[in-house]
Length: 431
Image (cartoon, rainbow, N blue to C red; front, side, top):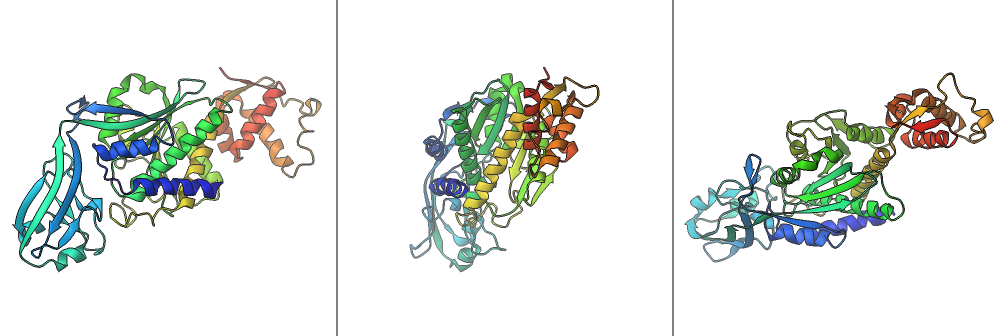
């Protein structure tokens, strides 16, 4: 199943990869339309000029075509070869200019001479082109025809939202960004994992309703999360846990970045899952730089939102370059990320506080048949210890995750044991 799911996610990345995306425009709409074939999406359009806290929704940008012809008429830069060739949000250009002037608008990566960088100019009107250093070094002197066929006009910012209702209005927020063009790991792997996680939750919903409600956001980076927060400030108090997914498809080990709180439920749940697994991983503290977790965790909200990546942003050489391609993302890596997300959600769903109904001394487990349920099992000693730990710490002050962490026992065992003890009349769920 893992192989098949990984392949499905990679195929979604491959389908989305050619689209020219930015923080606004038709590329975002096309992306959401493709995701919308797999999960139901409510697509929102927020008009240009809308005030969202200290920001304003910008004009909509759409890129139709772009090229550069050398003095012989040979096309040396062509949008059809890579949509990274144009600096995102470049103003329209139709000029002939000498090479010296053109060079002032060219961006390269001298340390990787065959790669094309990704650059943006969202909030200052300018234009630019990106190319390989090797190409730029080969350009002869003479006049160059430069054409960027783009529109920058009144329009809207587009984002998608997928909601699954649970037993309560308390929410788990899953967020990914949809604003980058052909960058497979950053950001398409996050879109693919979020989509597959939503599909798995929907399948579970057909069997049993989850405790939490789940809200998935497919938004442009920074301005998208700020816009969503501004438009939904009235119910942010429902968010109990949150996770930003980005750079989750490369073969590197997993990295979890804690929320600003540092000890939120999501921080403890995912840290427990990673620590109890055989996966190589790193857990880092919050910093106000990165992806949209820095908006959700801004001091005016301080939401319990962490961030999950494999190799973090800017820490792999292909980051924000043409080398962040379909060869970089691996089906097995995305499948592994998905499993960590799923295991974490299972912890969040099952974590409860209980009250021991026989707290004065150990209750007699034998006459209740509880020792009989574990006798002869290879893990009998571990299960017996789980019963003792759950009974001892079920004082309404400790959750099951607290008990798992303190005992060193796996959370699923602790949760299963608590259910057994509840059925035996020894535990009651805390109000």
